[in-house]
Image (cartoon, rainbow, N blue to C red; front, side):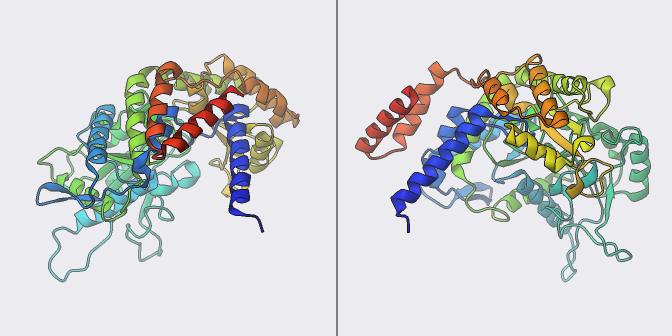
Length: 480
């Protein structure tokens, strides 16, 4: 039976190997992931990572239930300001710890809002009807009845299924919405909630089109945009609040620079009939969904928000240019690319390829992985199930941050085409090419970041001798 020390050594060795492989040898093209900067990582492991800071509004004041929370309270308030500046909105709720939880806070809050005026003894009701994107057309799991919408939408007695209407897509391009068909469905069904946003996300959502139609309805629907995948592209790709959305949600670790958390952003004016909904959403964040909301990642998110607000414009422009470059390069190397070639196949960070001619998506994704290219197999609109996926979903956001520009993706696309089409082993060549992209950009340069990271880390180790030995070991490893 191994001792604790032996188990610790083994786990440390395995962690070291995995980190070195993913950070130094692989091209990570998974569209829902990103490596945080060194400063963000250091903030994540600082003292708040083991603390609590439960709080809620009581009689108009924010009441905290733990002592020693002044610092993290100020961090949360400042992060709200930074995120509000990023979105250009009035309200930010940061306590959800994932994008899916952020969505669930809205669904819970909306049910509470819809039942606020019910008579005594009257049974509460669920959301009467929801419009969302269908899963097979890229709709996000968190906006499906099998996901976060579970139990919050009424069932149709005739079918026994939830009362969901899917946003229609174009017949000639199922990745783009069909506004005319959507207009007819809106008038026919009059939903209470419309959820825009996808996980397979190439093109803009018809927010303004819908907002213009419903703005004069007596009881208009809540317009919500799940921007989990494109949060870091807010403004450059689409600006839902400017187009009439009430709420935006997302996870903060895909195209946004942050830690793994969720956010709810609101732009419901004071005095609006919908304004009480924001109060209900806050109440569903705490105590409705969270107790400890992971304060280390909250501190890291503030540092990430600084980075995003500082580098937003150049990062967003490079990401979108790189996605188009990767799509074009893959197509030129013989890999079929989904979307419309007339607009560069994509308007986001994502590229969708069709690999069915070369093998099942799951198998091709594994083949790429064994050759140091990490991707995400994906069911396409004409696939029967996710188990028979004929596509692969790619994202350029992480490698953009590691310095890749348009020309660099042609070499990578050629290596990928060898792996996909010919089944040619290319792992060593891929690992060698990755050596050109190890320095992270869109953050402070190392000369400025390293002293700050060292200060955070040193202060997090209370034993002076242990801290000194740790720093010495760190220097030795770095030197090696």
